[in-house]
Length: 572
Ligand SMILES: CC1=C(/C=C/C(C)=C/C=C/C(C)=C/C=O)C(C)(C)CCC1
Ligand SMILES: [Fe+2]
Image (cartoon, rainbow, N blue to C red; front, side):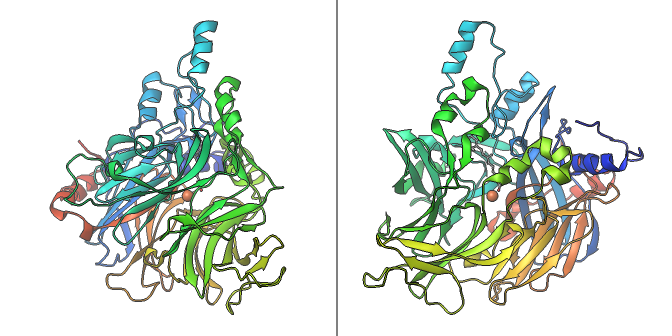
């Protein structure tokens, strides 16, 4: 790996510039070992942040990829770095802090990577002799996964958690970004893996899905619910997970190769779950430690298999009788789903294979980035439409969809199964977000990051499903994070609000900034620049001030003054 130029005046070669800046701005290499954390930054402003926009944008993503002499292999392995942008009275305060997971602590104490992540298998103790080595291997047959929760932030009532895809989540303090309790999902629901993309109903109850691997001889996908509140109020310190309940479980088609999934969809009455041919090989996972290979190597795309579409009725908590399937594909992000005229529509970002995760190996990102990180399958917004009632008398081969606004089809097959052919809506977008008030309901707009040849976003896109037109924001050297929609208070129109996105720049002269766009027109309303090394993040959420106890949550009024005195004022 190339050396890193901390001195901005050094003049590296052009090729180095691309790579070095990549490292500097995004910290994919993770040289940034020391704590960035706990700081308020006084910002430079352009434009005006709407007065009503008061709250905190909380983000999560990988931050540290090197510990001592050891480095992770994959971008998704990086130790979680939490970010917050608190917007108050037109000013923005930035803060970041590493999640103090058990993984973080163990690594820092050992001064090397000792906990395995998605793309890196690690060994806790340098085993002294063959016997202890064998013992150590055996005790890892059933792996204890990492609590390096780097993907998203989940809200459970008043509590916030950093999340990943293992059985662990970490409670965090959204104001100070301090790490609190470690929660093991397995204590409450039998899941070894769970998504970092839960859904929320209007009352804030959480719905999520996880995989229970070979438990009592069965492998299942388990949909579970975590109530936001409980009758009589939640007792201080009592985990909301204590009140979690299994909503429904779906038997995996294969005991030893359940599908991998990253999100799911919901409508008012149904849950949409894709059992896709991108599968985990459990036997490979059980022997990964002894073979010295990563979890990622136990994940494979099976192009010869179908994608099975499971629809669960939320009223009966049971899968509907009809069996739906489509061509092999890989979906990480569901966009939205809703019901209309007896049909269930769902929109996803689909790939033709599982190559996306390959592109995030740091070796691919650091050397010959342009060559090695080229997307071979474009992320495409696809709309699927399923008939909720399959007419027994319909002819085999007939299209069961009769909606004027979509070309998506559902063909009846010989055995009564339904083969779904999606409508291709838009090519080259990822990290989709919507106005969440429309989640599960008819909607029109998708806000997403625009990607071209590489999986790194270069644009922010607003796609209008009705008119099939799009608006874009982009600027030279700028890499936008997932765009988040925040509605204007009292908004009636779906796009009445703003888009927030943290932008990192590959130009060393240009500081990262928080961008505020008018969600309707996509014109820039404001930007607040922060002179700090900021990392590209993955997902997050916005916490409006109204939902907070303002007295307790407001950042110190001294903060701007303190920060103004220097570039960054570390918190004491
Ligand atoms: C550690 C670990 C896993 C981690 C997966 C991760 C960390 C995925 C990140 C995905 C992202 C960031 C997708 C963005 O679209 C698995 C495979 C669940 C299986 C077992 C252990
Ligand atoms: Fe995601």
